[in-house]
Image 1 (cartoon, rainbow, N blue to C red):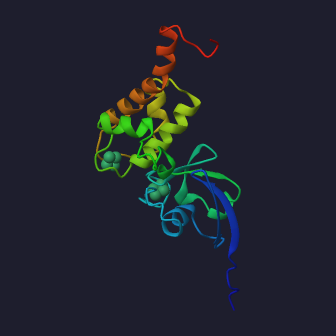
Image 2: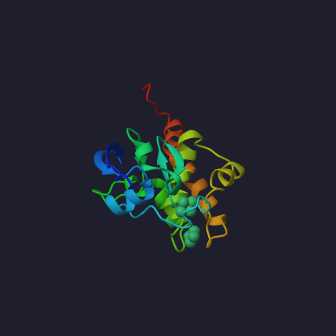
Image 3: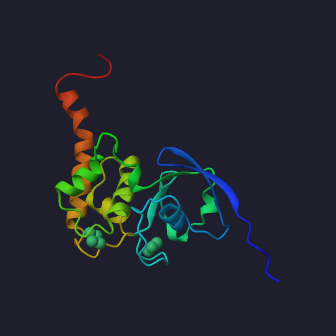
Length: 177
Ligand code: FES
Ligand code: FES
């Protein structure tokens, strides 16, 4: 007779909040995020590691949540698209704004994964060139945009992020004053 599968209690820091819940040992992170926590910004596409739509950041690294067991994320930090921007103030993250302004969003299915992947890139490399951007997002498939607007959105967000510092320097201000 088959042994009953035992639930395990795990905790994660999800979008800046400590969350504790029970999971089956074989439960996938994407299912926990979408079905247990209602974080449906993370999409399910191929469910086989091919499309990238389920990408979230785990400890800052883009990771396919359809190939990740929730139990393996115990004690880790997860960022989903819902964790970007400031929901209380109704403010978008600069990457989200840039995707809207530069037409990087069409049907929107790949957008959460694209934006999170771009965030991980810009956190490591604030001024990536086009080749570096294309390399970073090559695991996420977009069926709509042809990628040109997505690359432009990421480039524009990178410029916008670096602008305040440049303007401060041009205006002769710095943290040292
Ligand atoms: S759903 Fe396609 S890679 Fe995860
Ligand atoms: S905007 Fe439709 S899949 Fe990328």
